[in-house]
Length: 301
Image 1: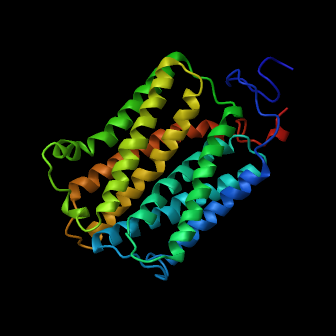
Image 2: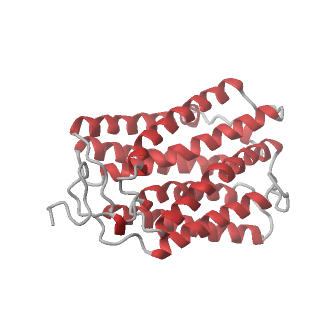
């Protein structure tokens, strides 16, 4: 046995490789999450319209774009990762964090945004899915500590840290007007005037969680702290999913002639989504190679 541990390969860090794949329950719960997100989108206004949300036309258009990305991208990502985990793919936790974090982030808005004036079984279902997603997000992070990742030199690590700072700045700049308006008591934008809770929930999530966590990941990478590369995978995965969903919202608003639609905003979000997607591909592709850590542990000599 070499010092890198059982099943380690050239180019990996010296962290000992996991002696066993993720627990079977991890893969099963990712599949349950995928099924729950699928049901939420299919029953919603995008497909069957069984579930209707008491929101303005603008927010209804945005939910259509959100559910489209959930169906086309997030559900397959979570399902494939769950299957990979059940097959013994040791890198599954690195892939599983993104759809879990996406679901937790979006379900906060589904639950709080509509401002229901009555008790709803829909809210109960979404609450259970939120708990599942948040639990899987934490579990993915914990399991990722045992996943060997490709070795990077210090220059790559610092560069990745700067990317984290750039991503945090991108999110923070979207709220520059809100922060400035706070000192003047300005009203929030007309887009959210009828659903203020939607705006404030996103405000809290983005500036209170996403930006600080992204900055923390950047600091860990630049300083060479343990866990920096794990945080890099987590943050890049989230940015590969959430900004495209926001872009889809903007596109649907344009297609449906929404009065709050904006071509420049849509183009900016679309360009950002392409950039974030390329970052994600560059980050995750090494784990997709036949000789990489996506191979079930039992198949590595």
